[in-house]
Image (cartoon, rainbow, N blue to C red; front, side):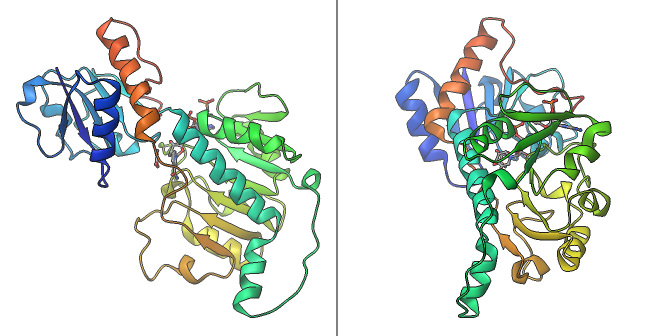
Length: 309
Ligand code: NDP
Ligand code: OXD
């Protein structure tokens, strides 16, 4: 039984080292050295070429290297009868929580203004609010959003989250479904997006949604770029409806050189690095699910292909 590994950046060596250390008996094939396709039972992949997974006749499990699985659903030939498993592992969660906490604190402590003051060689104190007066709202209260929400409460921020189903997270106000979105937005000074990309969330962050925030609210985008109507966000930034944005994901990546986001004085641009799967901690999650599938049990974190996440 072989496991195929394909990442989009050169991290094969780190994964191979982690697999070899933790499961030395596991035969690992690193893309593009696929070998005999009939021997591949598990594929741990990021952006495989369309139709490739369907060409593996004995595939028993498809693992996304990332939390998002939109890169797999983009393949019209994705096998529907093989479990697709999204990445849930402590390293990825910890990294995203660090990013969300950092970005919220940057907004809270006026770092966009201070960056602009530095560029202008201008020295001026900006008054500080208490965390109790800065309401944070997270779109998507799943593995990543839920952990970030929990940690943000420890700073004293009033934290709420919006998801499809109601959540019970200590200290976090849960809003659920379309009918509660407006109320959630109306009490959000820093909006964080950690939604998966699905047919329902694509283009969801548009002029109407942004107009539902209190004037001057900030936006942190870490889900997927296609959730954001970028022209609407730019207009909201220019009108002051959105006071600042920290953007990690974009409709087109790498962000084109002529994108107005690069030079926007109210924006911080990052190259899709909010968090990354850590091979050392992720191998354990993959191996546990391989064992479950081999024993005829349901794998953890299986994607509902109809819901799209
Ligand atoms: P989960 O599946 O655990 O959580 C998704 C959350 O979104 C759930 O709370 C879900 O609600 C909610 N949701 C989905 N669709 C809707 C909808 N239509 N309306 C309301 N709520 C909805 O995913 P993760 O937390 O693990 O990951 C979230 C996303 O973060 C990934 O899909 C990926 O796109 C992005 N990501 C970005 C990274 C980066 O570096 N920028 C790194 C890692 C992930 P419910 O719980 O009720 O189902
Ligand atoms: C992910 C990502 O989905 O890195 O894990 O974007």
